[in-house]
Image (cartoon, rainbow, N blue to C red; front, side, top):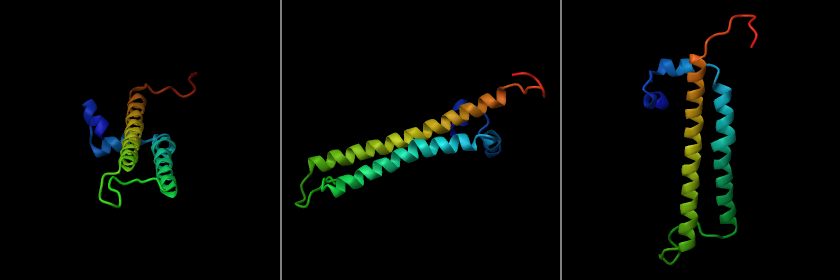
Amino acid sequence: MLPATVDGTNASVLMALARAKGNFWYTYLRLVYGPTLFTIVSIAILFGLVYLNIPIDMIDQTGGIDILGTLVLFLYQVFGLFGTALAATVLCKTYLRSQDQATRPEQAPGAAG
């Protein structure tokens, strides 16, 4: 619905459901293999860092700022933002695909093409 709002078209729930027809698997597979897989790998890397005793917190045990932990935490947050951007990209591309399908003329049965 957000891409429709930005595009200036009808952003109602009913129109979103109508645009969604035929796009479920297209969207689902891209969400699974894009942002979801990226997030799982990011979390696995974070667990690996914990396993290697690399700090992942800004504050160390003495109460001071841990530079390495701050850097790791910053990179993890950047990865999270990138995963969100991937999801937004998938949803916007799905919206554009649904708009293309809606404006494409219907072919007559038996027509070559």
